[in-house]
Image 1 (cartoon, rainbow, N blue to C red):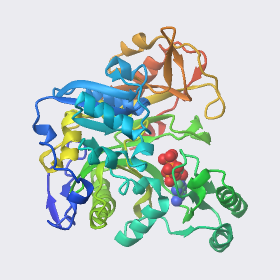
Image 2 (spheres, rainbow, N blue to C red; image 1 turned 90 degrees about the horizontal axis):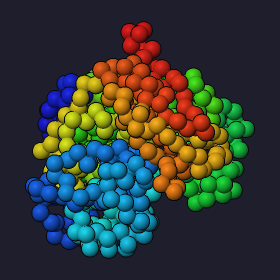
Image 3 (cartoon, protein in one colour; image 1 turned 90 degrees about the vertical axis):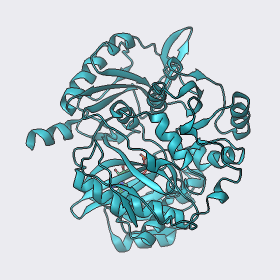
Length: 472
Ligand code: ATP
């Protein structure tokens, strides 16, 4: 192993690590990229970019990409009205790879940035690469890190990555017998993508059995055809991001989110009601452990499997009494975590993403602001249950006048020229500040300017981090 030691602004003293399982000749680059590679992107003075996706994460990415001096034109497919303020919206279905390729060819797109996981797991990066189009995002094979929980657990076992003890099952009987042996609490997970609905943290054996039955009876479609049953881990959760070009891997920020809908982290799970960055629990020493024990072994094992990981690796961690353990991998940026990472990134995002696509990440050193950022999700009344669409939203311009504040749009639409709610999580009211407490104060000041009676938001985003500072 060869380590390139480079200090990072975000986590002083943290090593930038070039993972070298990747000894020359061990990674079959040509298999993943059959066409001769075009000239390195980051060496080009100007780039046309297509961003795939339509949520708050993509608005934050578009907002940051639009600030790049390398950018000439930014397209987004399909985008949303907020993204439309910084990009040209294209009515493309990301599931229609042939249509995406045709658009890229006709517009001479230099780089495609894929936001969500579904097109990655469906192989959009492979199809673009086969058509000679540069892409930021992993291949179908590498996207299995998110697309199959069993795949990731087996990889952890092979590479000795700390994670919850587990077993994989393809039928209910043996899964229930295992639960009976282990007892509760225990965690039942559908193997495939289930839009955040595939995990049951069961407090009783009966609850675990019901979750197993639901999976095998088809409640989650093909995602539940296989089930992972794993040990319950106690601790505090944190999100850790790393960029990888398949060989070099560098840390790319930390965040924590609030999954429960209610204040005090109560009530049903959601896609995330707010987030902040950096995560105070991830100290420089802990971040170095995460890189050494989790991220770097993952990237080197993927390269050994001829599935080099190129993109952003988002590790969901449980910080336990024994140290950090991997809960899950995502193969794309987080939502709403991206909304707090992008405002803190001082470097040019486009140059970094292009370097990942070109395999030149070793040349890059992302710079981060010392500021913190916090985002408050405004959701439609009723979310995460049923909620109405179409209520009008105002006050976005007033919110943006608050110092350090930016409003990212997640589930919005334009109706007769008016902005209306068009999803469960609708707005991400985000602010920077010199501390999480100041970012929180500004975000809530901005949220108070938004005029949307049919929306709601939690008033305590960041409570744990602010409590930690006060206690500390
Ligand atoms: P999401 O789509 O929200 O990222 P997911 O459906 O991919 O989630 P996981 O992230 O694996 O699933 O799990 C969802 C949540 O369940 C975690 O954030 C964590 O709170 C809890 N969880 C998962 N595994 C465990 C575990 N082994 N022990 C304790 N809690 C767990």
